Image (cartoon, rainbow, N blue to C red; front, side):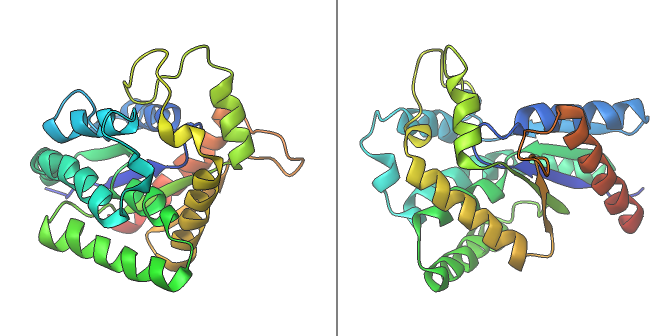
Length: 233
């Protein structure tokens, strides 16, 4: 039996991760491929996910001010809880599509660190924790959906109520309120795209500076997924 393929879609809030991961899942199903969808954090489905949701709502103080090693460990434990199921799916030959994963830790916690050398050291430490100590499955491909922060924040502000992964209608996520933090998170992602072979970026903007359609972005993602699948099998 062929081993499955693990694809992660990530990006800043408002980049369309949930939409694009669902489109990719649907495309695989249409092609007759066994596929499963997972998303993180598991806000209402795990002990650690519930705690993360509380932290993001500011119920336990200033979460953004927390040391990235401490904050990232909480997110890592949420994935650790889901790792056996992902591993089982991959062993059955299923394609697993994830809306965020360890990459979210790398992007957002790495975004707390401005110095590139310190950031690189943190990312090495984080990889050791997630993939060697906790031994969560390593994705075959991380696809970063690149959207300028001012655009993603504008998309979020158009919604009458903020709903980020089940945080609840009308509740404002602390992360979304900190523009500088989101800018640094984007810089962290761009650093990973430059330095990690398993990372690729897809721009959500046209050459004219307008937001591309969902279908246009999906076609780029599908092309990348097909190339990856051909390379693996």
